[in-house]
Structure formats: C-alpha cells, structure tokens
Image (cartoon, rainbow, N blue to C red; front, side, top):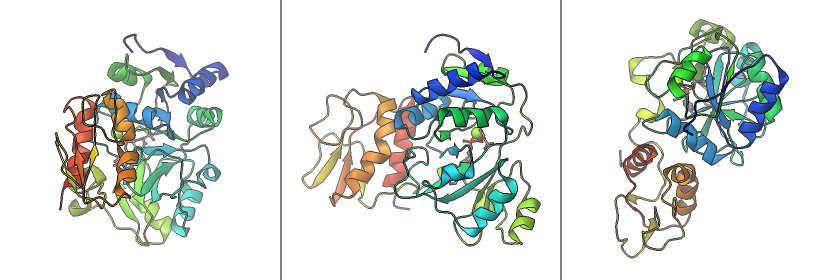
Length: 317
Ligand code: TXA
Ligand code: MG
C-alpha cells in the first residue's frame, strides 16, 4: 500500500461492516479496545497474520493475543480449566489475557502463537471491538497497533502516525479507556503465572484465584521471544545451507534453490515465507529426517524475524 490509510468513525454500522469485510479478505484493520488500539487480522489466515509482523517490524515472532466476541467462541481453540473459568467469569469482557493450552485442531494460525502450544486469548470490553468481532464472525489476532518499539496507541491519531500507508483501515472511536495493555497471565498449569502486568491488577487476580499466583520477579520477567531455544522441532536444523547433504531434508526459499517439496516461498516472498514457516517446520518434523537443512533467507524485513525464529529453533540451549 502506498496510499494513506482511511480513518472511519466507528459510530455507525457501515463502518463496522466495511472493517469486517476487509478482515475477511485478509486485510489489516486497526480498531479500538478498552486497553489500546489493536492491529487486527483474521487469526486463522497465515498470510494476514504474517502481514501483522511485517507491518509492525517486530524483531521476532513474539506471539499475538487472539480476540473473541465471547467465551463460547473460544471452545474449539483452547483447553479450559477451573482457573481460567474463574478469571473469565470475573474479568471478561475486560483487560485480561489468558494463556492456555492450544487445542491440537484449532484453526488459529500457528504463526499467531509463534509456534508455541499455548494460545493467548481475550474477550475485549469495548462496543466497537465487540461489534467488529461479531460482524467478522471469526477470531481476530491483534497486537497493539504501533511499530515495534514504539508506545502503544490510545487514539486513532497515534495509529495513523505510526502505521498510515501500511494498513487498510483505522476505526476511530476516540480515546481508549484503559490505555494500558491487558494483564497477561498463564493459567495453563496449576500455579498461574503473571507474564505482563496490565489493566487487571495482581491483587485482583490473587483475590479471584484464592491466592495462587507466581508474581513477576526479574528471573521470570520473560516473554517467549526472550528465550534462546524457543520454537524447537525435534529434528536438528542446519542453517544457511546452499547444498544439502544426503539424509537431510531441504527447507528451501526462493525460485533458485535446489528442488524440494518444502519451499517457504517459491516466489521469494518473505510475507508468504513467514506465513508458511511454522506449518512447514511441523510438516518436516514428522518425516523423521536426521537434519533439516535450511536455505539462506535474506536478512531483511520479515526475513529478520524468520531468521531469528530459525536460529532459536536451531539453538541447542
Ligand atoms: O491490551 C492488549 O493486550 C492489546 C489489545 C490490542 O488487546 N494487545 C497487546 O498485544 O498488547 P501485544 O502483541 O502488544 O502484546 C502481547 C503480549 C506479549 O507480551 C506476548 O509475549 C504475550 O502477550 N503473549 C502472547 N501469546 C503468548 C503466549 N502464547 N504465551 C505467553 N505470552 C504470550
Ligand atoms: Mg505491544
């Protein structure tokens, strides 16, 4: 996109319908939530999710929060447990993100959860976000709508200043009420862990859960993107390979690499490659080869994030 991004006032049904159409078409729409503006994409569309990473220039595939219209819409995507039920009943819709076990057959893009077996989910408490989720009739992956490293946007103007020209629409509904991102808490395991402080306080969580919460200490202050070995197929990886050795499966890139059934993008398109990365690594991993030989990926734009993920996958610690 080279043109400036249109901004529509979100106070009418046509604007919501337009935004929902764009999302269903694989486009990116910024929309208000009660916390901050989110940069939304169809969470089941690998290519649309890859565009989020591209547009934000995230240095690595830090996983995204997937937004739902209501709790019922989550049932085929995550494994519920008592802790999640209790927190959802008290704080949803609202500024709380729950990290839970992903269901094996969830249709959510693996890129949205950066190849992890967990999924971060939330039901936002904002009339525009809720109307958009209902109209699009699908889960929406949405990080904060800012370039990586910049502050989260709390007005449509902030979004416009950071991303205009690179996204398809901005829905404007004034200032976000919470203005601070949601609290992220991992409740998959029996001892819940606070991963990011936010709109719901630690005290509120502890009182709802009856006291079991591992707080944020410096050793636990981590996001998945900070771990060195992060997404790790069981097959070892060898990177920057021009010619694979016998017994290796080649993970290719671009039109000129040796023939292989596994090419991240025959066209050499980094957005397509990012969208394919986790799905193809999974497919190769079940082949039982002794090594995955990875062709060189250009270290520019989304290629940086792809290489970051590949280096983590290849790391032995
Ligand atoms: O309020 C918010 O949460 C906003 C609005 C738009 O909903 N979204 C937002 O997204 O702040 P983002 O991408 O800027 O932050 C997502 C955070 C990151 O710290 C990420 O590491 C964490 O959630 N996260 C996402 N999926 C995760 C997972 N499976 N396990 C652990 N942490 C996860
Ligand atoms: Mg953010």
